[in-house]
Each structure stands twice: as structure tokens, then as C-alpha cells.
Image (cartoon, rainbow, N blue to C red; front, side):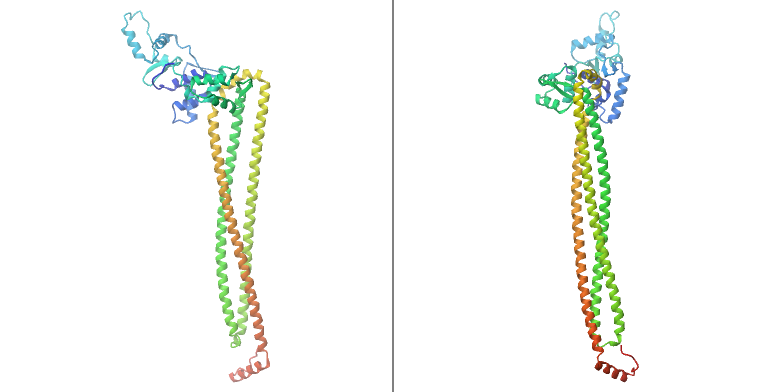
Length: 471
């Protein structure tokens, strides 16, 4: 086949070349080929609309139950131009052909060499290049732009009886350079290539359709799982923010406890100072008793506050354990989803065995369904890569969540330890208070002795306050 020496002019020419090579294709199967050649700024849906509109407007494209095909019969008025291109074996401009016709001697008797460029556009035998020259569709079939899987499917479509791996390799290698190992691996990779015995492989279009449908279901399930992961991630993020706020509250509470303990120590010092002056300032004893009662109430309040802090710490430990339980439940749900996917794949194997038994009836359905199943392979590969990336991202997020949980558990341990230290300090203060009480009782017993009472009466007599009763 000859080299065209330029790029194709329009979408119609690209569709002509594609349908000439694959003979019959659906619109969905043609979209990836067109997208690689032109309309790269368009989305896949827009490209599909453009392709369908072009196929319907041009008469050289035929449609039936199997799909779209190229009409190579063409317009009879263009047969002379077709024969000229066959002789020259290179692209020719229409203007050059028209000049040659005008310069011929028998202008009146000769028919026009070309009926017009509009008729060439609607003729499936011709394609136009960007420089305005015209060539034949059968020239230079660029097989290298098609994937190995598409070429192998084309070979099996043209040989429905089956071929060996060597035969498939020879045919595909004539189109593009490849290896027999790559061809064999391609046929073993997909379930719609079946080995019917003695190394003979055939293509099963119905299994290809089922395989694509199962992959669609699998990808939709993974998308739903992804949405659930995103929701769970948002929920756990909110929980972590709440726990951060609670940790801030705990730190504020710790500061308050420290201030209360400092105040308690200062008040205890004042109390000791008052006890040492008790013998000299007996008149202020009643006031000191009231202060002692107030200190007791304050200590009781501090103890209740410490107990409330300990209760909050226990609640946070309980919440952390509930978070671990929820994570285990999520793991179990993931395992169940994987088990259901494995069950679906086993069912697919059972369907394959049933399809092999009904191979005679499925032969007619191959040609009907084959044209609808070739476009999804590239999308499946991309979605698999995205799925692996999503799984990797979720694994990293799970690892990060575990690290955050470990940090929070360490903080909770520190809070529990600090609360235990506060309780020990409280017990020490209670012991000090009991010792102070015992000393106070001793002082009261000393005051009640007759000698002290007599001394007090003498002092009250000289001070003019003999009527005052000694407590």
C-alpha cells in the first residue's frame, strides 16, 4: 500500500480509513480511534455526537444490525478518477486532473474526468488530505495506531473457525511489529478468547459482552465503595476535630486543677501559721474554726472536681474503644464485599461453561454482538489504574488514622496518670489535715486545764472583762 504523504483532511476521511480496516464497527468503537486522530479538545460524548452526525449525513456509510460499514462501490462517474489514482499510485489534486482534461485535443468528445469534489467526499473509495490532494482509501492502512487486542479480535473475526497462536501472530505481525509471547499473553488474559483444543483459539463475542457488563458492575460497586469511604473519612475527620476540642478542654481543666492545688497549698500554709499562734490569740479561735470549715468545703469541691475530670477521661477512653469497634466493622464489611466479588467471578466461570455447551447457537450471535463490545477495554484499564490509586490512598489514610489514634491514646494515658497524681496529692493533704486536727485537740485539752483557766480569770479580772466566758 502506498504512502499518502500527508494528514487526513476531515472527520469523514478518518471514519473511512477506520471502517475500511475493521469492516464493521459501532459508533462507540469508533470514538477512541477518532479521538486519537483529531477532536482531542472535545469530550468523549461530544466526539460520539460528531461521529454519529457525520455517519448519518454521508451516503458512503451503511448501517445494519451489525453496525456501520463502508460502501466501496462508489459513484460510477468517479471510476475514471479511480483508475487514474491506481495507475499513478500517489495522491493527485483534482485541479491537475481538470487541467489535463482541458488540454486534451478532443474536448467535446471526452467526458469529464472528475464529476466534482462533492461526489468524491460521498464516495467511500477516496480520501482527501490536508494539502487538497486525493488518494484511495485502500492505501496505507495504519495498523500501528490500533491496540494489539483490537488487531487480535479483527483476526479472529475474519477467521471464525479458529486459529493457532502462530497463525494469529503471523497475521498481526504483518500489520505491526509484535511478538508471539505478547499475542499468546493477550489471548490468555481475556476470557472471551477461548482455546477449543490443540492450540486453536476462537473469539467469543457473547462472553466479551458479559465480561464488559461484569466490569461495569464491578466499577460501579467500587465507585459506591469509594463514596462510602469519603463519607466515613469526613465523619472521622469531624470526630477527630471534636476530640481535639475535648483535649483542649482537658488541658484547660488541668490548668485549673494546678491553680486550685497552688491555692490549696497557700491556704494550708496560712492555716499552719494560724495554728502556731493559737495559744496567744485565743480570742480569735471561733473565727479560725469558721475558716477551717470553709477550707473543708473548698477541699470537698476540689475533690469532686477531680472526680469529674477522671470521669471525663474514662468517657474518652470508652469513645476510643468504640472507634476501634467501628473500624473492625468496616473491615468486616470490606471482606464481605470482596467475598461477593469472588462469588460473581465464580458465576462468570459457570456462565462460560454454559456458553461453551451452546457454542452452535452462539455462532450467529457473535456477529451481532461483536461490534458493540470493543470500546470498553481502554476505559477498563484506566479505571483499574484509578481503582488501584484509590485503594493505595485509602490505605495511607487508614495508616494515618491509626497513628492519630495511637497519639490520642497516649494523651489519654498521660491524662489518667495526671489524675492519679492529683488523687495522691489529695490523700497527702487529707493526712496533713488529720494531723492538724489532732494538734488542735491537744491545744483544746491544754486550755481546759485548771491552771490555764485560773490564769485566764486573773487576766480577765485585770482587763475588766471578768464576765466573759472562756470557751
